[in-house]
Image (cartoon, rainbow, N blue to C red):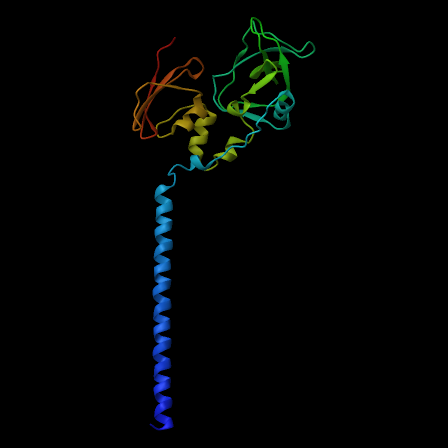
Length: 241
């Protein structure tokens, strides 16, 4: 075998090796792309279709009177309207008039909490933790927890957003936010959007995941809403109590 023939064979083998290497690399690349595509589809399928589930509102985790005063450091917004009763408050005497209810906190009502105080309530052994705010130039207080045998239980995180819900749920369409601001429930809204608009609701027992009936006091103008697959489908006036 001449040197020239030997060189040609070597070049041919090298070319075949390079071609095989490129083909192998291409096969591995395509397999990698297929795995990535499959993982993306899997993540999409197992993820939540409702973007609301990806919203995680900030919490303060208050555990005593001092930590409850964190509520004074920013505005708060009411999570469930027409659920929490507030009372007249005499700031100078730090006294709550529990004998006279002043009203119910409205849906997505914005409050500037001025103080958190510990007061005694009539006919109750445990003392109440109250959030103090002003409305119409008058002072009021709403219960946000209690103290019993020296231990505190404070549930303000369940009552208030400490971030603007308009920013938290800015993915909602403009017409939904318009309905919320006007305190109107409209077909197509989901349950959280309706809660923002007209406050708390009480579901019927035995509802299914597809169909659900909820009764809303709505500040004295009761509504009954039937949800189909998570969306308001039927809205009717409820019976007056």
